[in-house]
Image 1: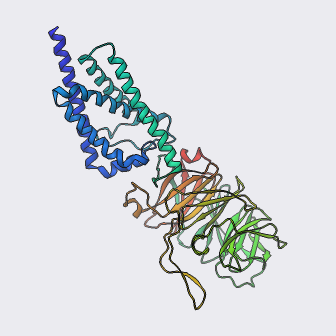
Image 2: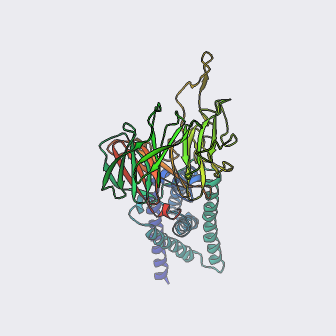
Image 3: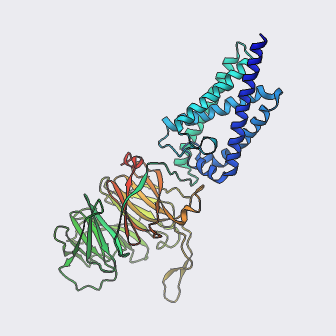
Length: 492
């Protein structure tokens, strides 16, 4: 009998010592790398909105339990706390592995080299150790029921946090980005030896680049970034005073445009010969071509000079309709409504994303607004200093603008947004050599994930275009190919 009591005491001492080592080491590790610990919690699909509170409370609770375990009279109660805390950790891992839409990076500290499955086994072993230690001290008919209630309650708390977190992230997002693994990564690059290229369009396994300094020169590159071929666009007329010629490729056509001149050229990419299809019908500051007859564009209202969106239903007739309700004025109706215009050929929807506020607009091809969604930042109102020059009547910006969303591109139901704002728990170091891209599912009106596009030899991302399998990016004089990981592929 004495032998059994001695073994029980040794087991109890051994269990408490293991827990003390575990909790003290874990808490100290978190404190020594606290900023990274908070960042990891910020990326958690369960704990993102609660990262501030959890980051402090977990450390405090671990240290309190460790201290109580070292006091013989309080060990029994401390073991109950250990079971509750480790049950929460275990439930967290189960939800991460089986119910979360992405699995974040592994934890640091004492478990740095363990994967999530190994973490689960580790936690279960520690939960069982504490339960056995409690049973050896107070074996009665109700103790198992009480332990079951404790474990179940701990699991329900974590489950509730998961459900509540998802609701907050989608409806009340506190500007926390998620960077799951297997989202997007560079799979190729090619040196163009010229920084004036931009991506004009894609077609199957081909990427078409245009040159701002040589507007009628086209460079075709295969999707493997190996084979290149140059073309020269031939215009049937050249009697226009162009200022900034741009080429858009929407296979099988290409378009030559300059919104300061009300002229649109079109030709086939099979021969690169362009003819004027629209002349003196409308000016535009941005335009997308829906099909061979329709185009949607942004221009200025001739009466108010404010931005307005219109649709041209025929290049041959003056069939142009405007919808002044699409863009919503906050300050001046010019700068505050500026943004990017995209078109999803899969959904047959138009997407307009504001530069200076956290909103994108989805319309049908007739410019009927179907949804106004928000990007994940919290800038609901454009932060602009707009000046009205009395002498000339011009409207100008009196200070550098606070830009929220810069470049955008669309493929299928996914909207890719190059945001210029750093989110919570994102280190300042990575922003010095990388650009962030946020991805939204416009069919579900939800934020999906984010990923970084890293500078190529010091060159930042300048232009990008999404295709069915990759994102093509211009960084300085390099063309980069970022392949989609399974997290993005599963959404397309």
